[in-house]
Image (cartoon, rainbow, N blue to C red):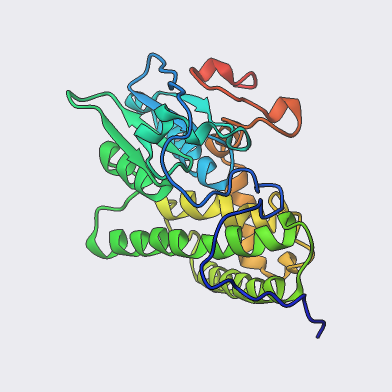
Length: 282
């Protein structure tokens, strides 16, 4: 095994230089607003501030799925938060999410407006608000939430671990790539085994669990994040691949992945969303 250059941690760590990589300018050791920047507000009760990363796609897919079911109260305005430009450190965004991470949601449908942050919390909030995508039965509801919280706990190993060191770090390093690859492949194997026995993640019904997991793990095996599908031997996870392709074809998913997207093919970008008419293929 090759050895990376030895690093000796200082006695007291200090942030005295950028750490390199694509996200070095926004990787900071302090929280809170760093500049004044008000958030826009549209006409709908639900105001989403996000970007089409996997965590952002979870929420836009959820909202589009609700609308697909004819739930008019789920109409929303979606505003882009350009994280590489530091929008998440603006005073307005920090007031909605003090953690300065996308996505963040404001619900103005009640007397006291409600802020909701963390993608899993937003998904559960919307599911409970509109009484859908979480089964009513005790066992089925619990299983759905099991997988929702599994995703919240597991995805950092995929994104901040494997994804960062494989795709974004300034140089390839054997130890972190090998370590996180082992964990990601374990997670893929877990999902593949689950989907060998069930049509969807939490059983035979499409639920919150599928909406949470697909933008990370479905898009990973479909080679839509990190460009690592071949490296991970994604085709070997045949049940997971079946599910990923099935979810990808849902009309609401096709719309949701475009919202707040500011890169890629022009016809797949929709930086702002304010109406169903914003989708030119609808």
